[in-house]
Amino acid sequence: MQDRKLGLHAFAEGVAEDFRRALMQRFDNDLARTILKEYSLPFRELMVYYRCALMEVETKFRVLNEELSLDSEQNPIEGIESRLKSVESILEKAERKGIDLTPEAIEAGMSDIAGIRVLCSFESDVYMLANALLRQDDVRLVEKKDYIAHPKENGYRSLHLIVSVPIFLHDRRKTMEVEVQLRTLAMDVWASLEHKLLYKKDEDRKTEHVRNNLLECAELAARIDQLMSEADQEVTGREVPPLRAAGQ
Ligand code: 0O2
Image 1 (cartoon, rainbow, N blue to C red):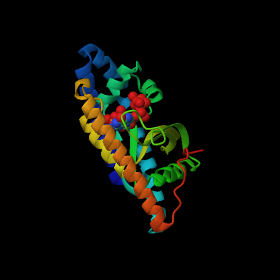
Image 2: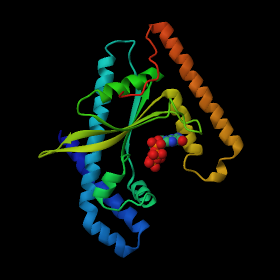
Image 3: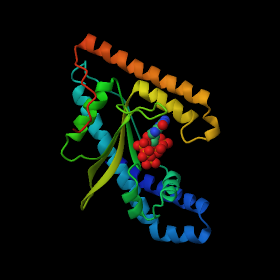
Image 4: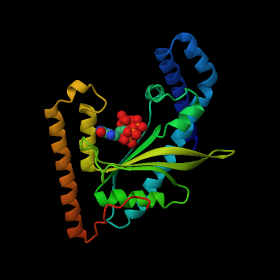
């Protein structure tokens, strides 16, 4: 408990320093100083709340995995990664989307400051876990993007959920939004490499040849998922549920 408190304190100090540095780099000194004076502490608080929300959601998935691991055939989570958007990316996105640089406007206008990625064994586990999360009575689905049922044009596949969850502070309860990305290992290999090569990179990298190669890789990854699901069904007898929309 003490460790966690110290961890959050150190984190808040780090955020304050990142916030100061990012503002000084991005804006002229007077503007940066004004923003810093007014919003440094509230912004620091906001980031601590997001970190707490990440811990809540991560724990929910760890609990599900622990429970499902009782059955050796059901060990659906291969890995969990969580991250808070960097201060620099928050400021960049706020500028791009015309969001005011106040903690209230940032909280209202951005849903992906806290992000968790859950790597699953099979495609059916993606939907099973999403449904198990959304069934919990303190979790509310804010938005869903099913890039598995409807892959992006470049081949990207994953299930994205924006959920809101409560965090329990010493004197009140606060609701925070967290972006959850669920994907299989095959989807993750593709997305991680594409992220390195092309995602948000200069357009001149994205020649037709490179795009076609990545599209072919995306098709191969989808084929791996399909064959693995069939093998899982044959070996364990588990039904492959139809790709249904999580939370419906
Ligand atoms: P990073 O670097 O991973 O943090 P918005 O976030 O509102 O500007 P959008 O399109 O509404 O954009 O969000 P969407 O489609 O839900 O995608 C958000 C996240 O999904 C991205 O976060 C990526 O992590 C991932 N993603 C979406 N599309 C792709 C893609 O084509 N390739 C890869 N590799 N990842 C993708 P960030 O913050 O944009 O980037």
